[in-house]
Image (cartoon, rainbow, N blue to C red; front, side, top):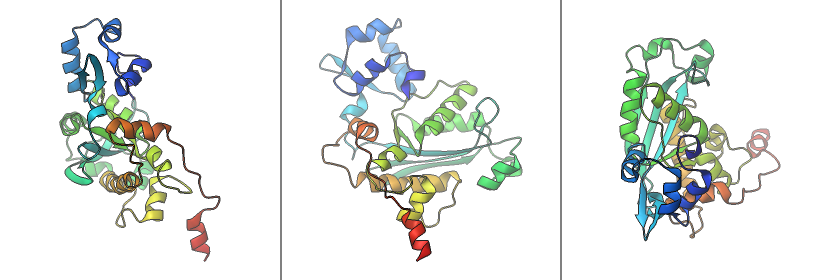
Length: 265
């Protein structure tokens, strides 16, 4: 996630998450005052610490049980940031397997086409009294703070929110991120990994309304807990979990759809 909006290269990013980045390597890539940059990055959601002479992501030292994960979902009136916008955003902050805070808002939108309304149930008139994108992005930035950004197929939500923030004059996101879909592929054997399919397979959120932001967030929260419950003991920190979600072996999928088999029976 960081490579597009971060001033350090991918090799340095990897070192920040693992064995540490030296001051020399850091200064080779930046021209600005280091203390200022560290504060700026932290304001964008990324805390970097100095330990024994090297620099690291703070998340390398945060145990899973102490970490704050922010599970996020958005609904939009299209997929192109140049033409479209967020129409609904929801999130829950999670610590130690429990929800500690929530965020949920529609966003004022001048036009939502019938296809999007059919999918989400959100009509243009539903957003008439909702706050503007600028208001919602400022509020969400404060809510997110420096927590770990979690979403199902995280790239879309993270990028769309980050670009939306830039649209209203805020800096892009730099939070560490985690994909619940990638994590599920490595912890839960399933024929498919779409959130709706996983919900039906594992009864994650019986009252789910798919393609509504808070409903999908709560489903993802239950999925996230299910995944964490199967982890190897070697996964102890946030960075361990991020690495596991990207590099661990993907589980073998069943050859046949068990839900289809149940329907036939």
